[in-house]
Image 1 (cartoon, one colour):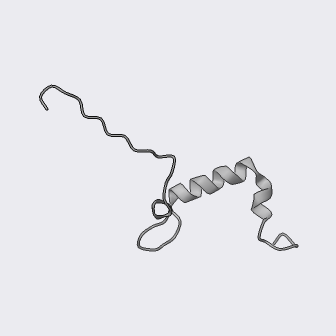
Image 2 (cartoon, rainbow, N blue to C red):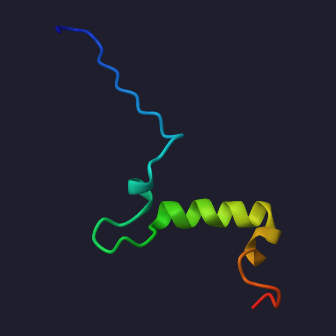
Length: 56
């Protein structure tokens, strides 16, 4: 391929669960944290879901 171009593209819009967790610890990583933080900032009521009636 003399004098040509090679272009590689990757769709970052669909990230797998594997990319959201650390392979060693199985804990969430920065990507998961950032996505969840963005979601909670957009809709703060989601922060209280799953915490029971007392909100604690």
